[in-house]
Amino acid sequence: MKITNHKLAAEAKDFDISFEKTPNVSGEFKDGFPNTIILHYTAGASLESSVVWLKNPKAKASAHLVVCKTGKIVQLAPFNIRTWHAGKSEWKGRKRLNNSSIGIEIDNAGLLEKRVDGYYTNFGKKVADKDIVLAKHKHQEEVKAWEAFTPEQVAAVEMICFVLMQQYNIKEILGHEDISPRRKIDPGPAFPLQNFREKILFGRGDDEVGEKLVAEGKIGVVTADLLNIRTNPTLDAAKAGEPLGKGTKVIVEKTVGEWSFVKVELAGWVSNKWIKKF
Ligand SMILES: [Zn+2]
Figure 1 (cartoon, rainbow, N blue to C red):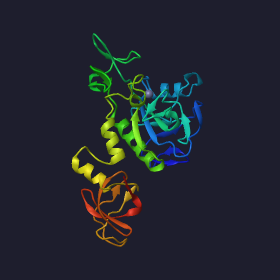
Figure 2 (figure 1 turned 90 degrees about the horizontal axis):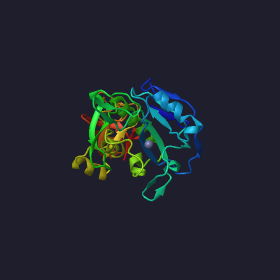
Figure 3 (figure 1 turned 120 degrees about the vertical axis):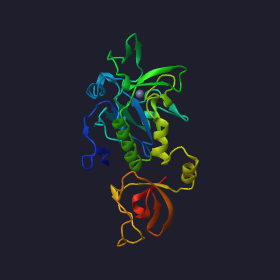
Figure 4 (figure 1 turned 180 degrees about the vertical axis):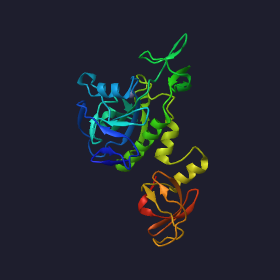
């Protein structure tokens, strides 16, 4: 996946991406923006119904992207244009987050309703047990039932955030619930937002060693589709193993000229050009 002219494009058919234009937009972002990604769930019945709604002028709502349960992605506006997904919102003294953020809607029913024979969506569909997550929302007291996100959706959103971070000045990944806490509960506790944010923004798990390495600027991530790893810092040196794929997290042990010595499960030399440090 890559971004061309502010639009997502698949690479080697890695993701199914299409573009449908919504009229529900404002003008371009001002300089320095977007700098935030806001995640939502649609609470809708399907990708198609959500896309139809977000293209309808009566909705007075939109987003840049909608991500289907299969991982299929529909883009509704280019990333240099402001969409209407955040509504009344505030984060760290900054208001009206539509002016500074990219909105990603994830096809998911959200909070479920308990009935005598099980859990139902707000559009009246019974949800299979395997698709239910029982969890407490961070702004609520009691455990409730939520529709699970699919691994394909989480993987697609992760790759989207990764390519957005490479292209734009993204500093934060937040939920709608974070910027409109009294009004909104999406994407809710079924979405692994905390892990996700740390993995994407800081390239780390939640271990102390990882945090220390991030603080020291030693964690990098591969930005080339495939990056050769070599036994010496020269182009004709033997390969240390299979090339590293895009998004592979590496520990940068040392840098000499154009080359960095990195550790993955393998260790060897790669070109600096293809390593982004956090
Ligand atoms: Zn939302």
